[in-house]
Length: 314
Length: 235
Image 1 (cartoon, each protein chain N blue to C red):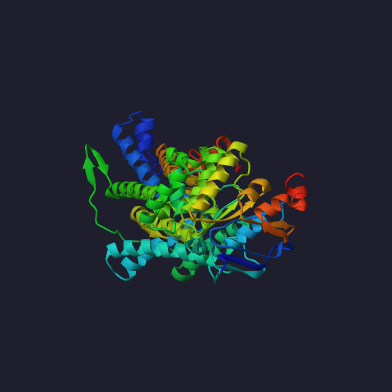
Image 2: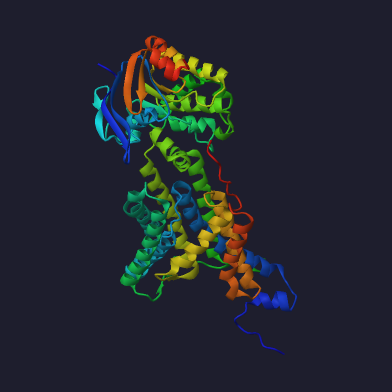
């Protein structure tokens, strides 16, 4: 009898090789997919909001999450302070950083060509990554557990409390964001600025402040994402934002960049795709599959799942 | 004292001088029109007054206070609204959301009141309040753009080509509304290519040619002026 190589997950052996696919394993994997997908969704929301308002792919967005994870590490591990404080400071720190980046790097370029803005975003991204490496070193820091959470077991399925929290927090964040954008005065102003900046100015809307507010909201979501990510992976490295940011970017494009429900759907799809691919034993392919998904969408439906086709102004 | 007084205003886009030192003024309660061909500098003048473009030189005084250098969103709050060329309604937002945006500088209580007034002038907007603006007809979009500008309770309303692209019957309707608004106490600065209609409703007019004012007079005078007839009224 052959021995089971440990690299392959149990799911592969029980389901695929022994053809005993049980509901429990599938449910566990669905939960994993939802957890990972939720984190991608939160990050994708930040991408999509900033793109929606100033047509900028904010490549520094993933790195904001990295900074958020380091803040948690400093507060809990270095200063030994309360985890609730760590969560609050991570979120507030991310929001502040997002607004600061907008004011310092992007605001002077409001009238500049989009390419200048894009290159600046890449520059900010490198700045944050290398800055973090300079300050914290290249090795990974361990972010301690925020809370000592028990694992629940329902009908034979062990539910990780982290997964449940991640999913619930993401759902609540999405609902709050949707209400903010659809119903509040500031949210409507964001939509107005995103559609026609000049006309928005004529309404008496302070466009720069509205854009900064958008960065703040997107970065709050990134801060929440940073906390949830640290809960799941307990690590902070200077480059952790790259892959996370890139995949969330794929999620945003997949769902239709500029669309809030699209970002959530895209995030969940990317999360599920990754978990599924590694569940069937092809975990080395999990990154490739995400990008394959992107290529397929760009060929078949370039505006993404919920993206609006470009409308001509008459 | 004039409500709006523009003096020696010069505006350029890069090396191109669009407005070359114009002066005019508007008294409270008037309809004043700027007429002229494409590229004469009419829209540039309005956009500069609204603060969207920085002038090279000159001054714009509104109720005695200088507007040059003030941000557009603050100019709106002072009681000067521009209804831009091409309407530029927010096509993905509903009619009532568009009107909300028009009253951005005002309180909710004030907006509630103004909304009733706007719906009185434009009953069709009330019927379509929950419709997405992009699905409105051209005439309805123009009404929405005007209603939206009125939501800020402007003392002076600037209208840039309100009749552009509209069927003749709608043009008549829009001009009737402009006159009604004026009777209710709104001072109006009207830019039009439809010089005939504009001069009929205006108390006074200014003729712009390649960035300069070449003629001025009452609406009635300009309507019968030989040069104006030849250039803008088809003989």
